[in-house]
Amino acid sequence: MTNSAPNNVTLAGVTKTYGPRTVLNDISATIEAGETVALIGPSGGGKSTMLRCINGLATFDKGHIEVGEHRLAPSSLPDEIHEVRKLFGMIFQDFQLFPHFTALENVIEAPMQVRGMTATAAKERAMALLKRVGLEERANYFPKELSGGQKQRVAIARALAMEPRGLLCDEITSALDPELKSEVLDVLLDLKAEGLTLIMVTHEIHFARRAADRVLLLADGRIAESGRPEKVLDAPETERAKRFLKTVMA
Image (tube, rainbow, N blue to C red; front, top):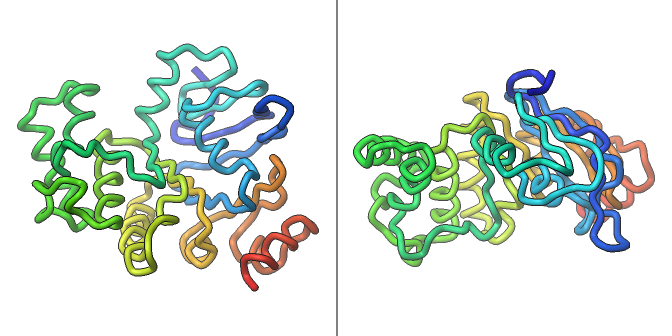
């Protein structure tokens, strides 16, 4: 049990290394309940690793992470990680849908297997979620029959089926063309309006500006800048942040 607010995510001195390379270097930050935070920065700066550490998909070497009432540390046990994953769902760039399941079956699988929901209850909730992301009519389609944007919206519905307090989104629009990106980003804006906590690794600077309450710019394993989008994107203070933003906003 932690002293963190019920829905907050707090990283305290988190350090992660891969061999001789330090990917996260003494990272400390708090994401408050209902906040939308965009993680931006150069490739290899630690953004995706930070998400994976929050979700327990990657271990770390020093520090701790509080996710709601649970704490992750380098010595965390599987049961503790499992509890964290109930609180924050994770959505990936490559969708990770089960190819042999329909959209509906992808959404009902975890509630039935993990939460013990009946098939009837899980299906009812899944259909409501597919409707929420605009895919009610595609419930019986297999992933190979869906566009990339539709697959990503199924992935969002699947994550929401576990009734999380927030979502961790790892570059979920990077593989999509502009029109399909818009479909997915509109769903995220709706979830933000409903008060869900969103922590998003993104290269969509315009979306970070429009939707994020706060931007964290990670570079070289450290948080180079943190603040409101207009502050970080328009008036960065560090040379490292200025160099990165000059590249992506040119």
